[in-house]
Length: 128
Image (cartoon, rainbow, N blue to C red; front, top):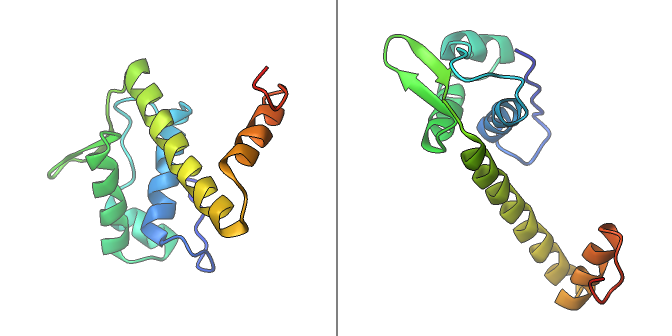
């Protein structure tokens, strides 16, 4: 499993693990029914605590990304296109909240944010 963690990041390690697995599932790198490494094996590979990996897996289970079967392991859940879309919209909302917080701190107005977004999408500031 190619999971990269940074001890220098402000993001907790369990969140880094959760985010990378989530991305692998949503991009199709991990398929429905595929088994994830055991908690102990992954914690050993990443040189992190068992509790850290366990929390990442539990968070993924809460989101419906994986299914944890006691005594059998952790597996990628069946995810349909509508569910993937909903998850992507939730990720977008999280990132937009970060942008909102940044813009407030930087003194950037809502209208200025919308103008930049329109430019990114190739339109003018009037939304065209």
